[in-house]
Length: 156
Image (cartoon, rainbow, N blue to C red; front, side, top):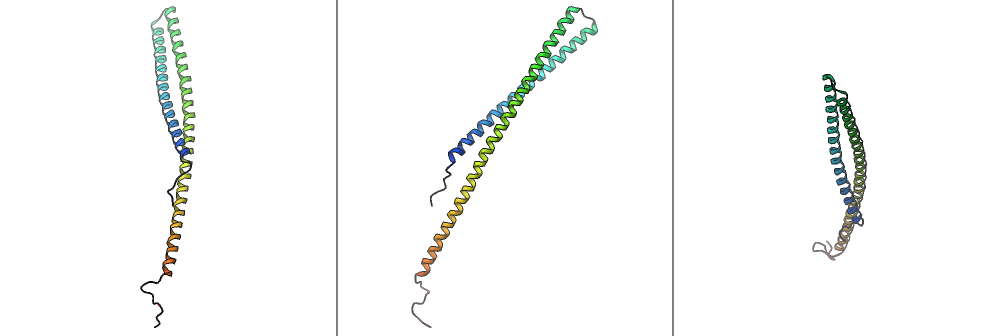
């Protein structure tokens, strides 16, 4: 019997490549999430520091020009933090989509792997049946041949 050959092997290879590409994209998205989170934390820290400076200046007594400039600077920092928050949310959403794609790619590959395994087991069972049939046939043929222990024409 010829060796097992899975006819869908090229598709299986392609699905494996698709899965690995999805994994790489997801890893990149996670790295982008981490970067966006750090940038958001930095912006939030900057904003808190800006508000702290504004509060300290108010406690000491400050002229209106300085108060206006500090307040404007805090608004700029707040806008920056909000932009970074929006960016982090967007990157997180992209990572979630890529996770879904990676999961689907894994399922597709695993389904094909299971089908390959079932096909291989069926092939092996068929090979065993054919081998057993061959042995059975050989045994029948061997039993028809006279052997050294058989008595030929002699009666007791």
